[in-house]
Length: 539
Image (cartoon, rainbow, N blue to C red; front, top):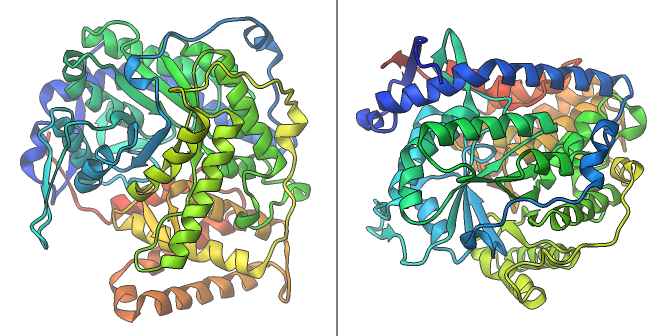
């Protein structure tokens, strides 16, 4: 990998000097070389996404590709699954914040996915703290002392297997530039993690395990495979040392599951039902179609035919290819001091995981340690073996099944709920918090995207809101002001004034009023995050 081109690094002025170990000269050279070698090809792949979205806006729809029919029709399997990933019946996810990371690794879950993407606000401090926490966790030296109680948090002898989700291909890391361009955020996250930890993992007889998010095309999977091959070669690791699970969380990717696994067949260990981003992607693909306006978010459950088809096809595809079909995240969480609400949350999670294990999933996600036992009980009862990869459903999913428009009503309360969630989530994200408990659900960037895109679709197609008439710009602005007033009543005037709710509401409204919406809300939100954070060149 070419390592000669200049780069610059900027850092938030408040960040401690302890970053030097993570941002060492050798580490930056490694990441910079990846960006030089693979950055142009990634930008071309992202340009292809823009073209495809233009085609969707004109009425085209995703489909099974005729040119890859031989891959779908032929018999092949992925490489054997590593021993420490054979049983993944419960995986817990969250950002690699120190206390949260310790609790997750100690939770009893089989796997902990450290998330640098949807549940993390990408301040440089958050990113580097996350990398340091992974570094110490892998070496079993991580420790946290609660300043208010004095309680000490440290790792148990037996902990969950660690996986890491870098940011999506569409995001950049503005704090590090190569040739005047910000580097791809995925290379920053995955590159630093592997540079600092791959050898330590190898010494423990483990591989390095990544979750790859938001793929839209098998050529993007090919790009990732070549990137990981280059990383392995540079770090003197055996080929296939880095193993991957890919999230199927875009509608185009649902038509290319076989192809994505094939491109990564020497390192793939499974696919995941990324349901929230998948619903967002479904909205985005259909955004210009007045006949495809979705109902309230609460009505778009996994029982909807298009989501049932997606889930069943994923299980069939994975098991046919010898790898895990991982269930998704139920957003319900226990609520402290709310016994009845917590009982309802447990019942919702229990039903969700029962459906997934009966569909054939080999495991599923939870977002809270208190839900690990709930999810595990369902898998233990219905999956006595480490997995059920040998079970291949006999189903026939066609293109129309994956594209079926869900039924349900569009209500005032659905609009108001989306506004409150979108504004409150964005406000937290701008304050550096990317994973937020709101109204009994764990919200992250994916669920905020559903709220944003759903309101955009309703406004663009002038959906009738019962009791108010068609949703026009002036009426929508009134709903925004009402949402701000309700948020202030919920959290109190002082907390409201101390927050960034006006900034969040302005951004959310601007995104929804746009004639052509941004592909991801985190792109303009990241620019606003950078504007409010002082930076200085440190290397």
